[in-house]
Length: 184
Image 1: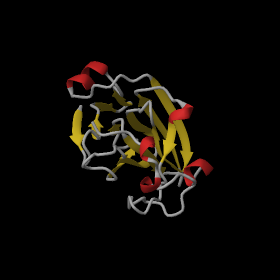
Image 2: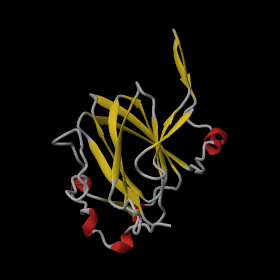
Image 3: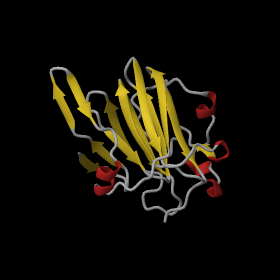
């Protein structure tokens, strides 16, 4: 497998080794020892799966406390996946990076704790899976407004389908500092 850096520290693109032949393909989506040897030292405790239609935007989500690192991947379709550094005191606070993930490129994205995460669906439908390093904790659930003008995220959809919750989050500048993780 190949591990590629992005513009944000700790946010990594992972290209698993894929074995193709006339029958289809085979790939390992996670192998603790190989990931650890590549510097990815997360203990994942929960897997999540979502199905979404074209134009759906989910995010920007995070948990605090009880932060979660995530290893995300698309099984079918294509998404534009975004990570935003929201760690107070970080030199890259408020910066974002985005990657196209699809069933064609078979890439994964590792998003460390301290980042908000979101994605929008660019195909007719998408099947999206992700591993989390901590359990979902409803009282720790937080979010940043997907269209925060201070972040200037270049989403490839103009009028996304949103949940009521996602459309009502605050801009990062308006989030109380005690609701944001601290840069270590």
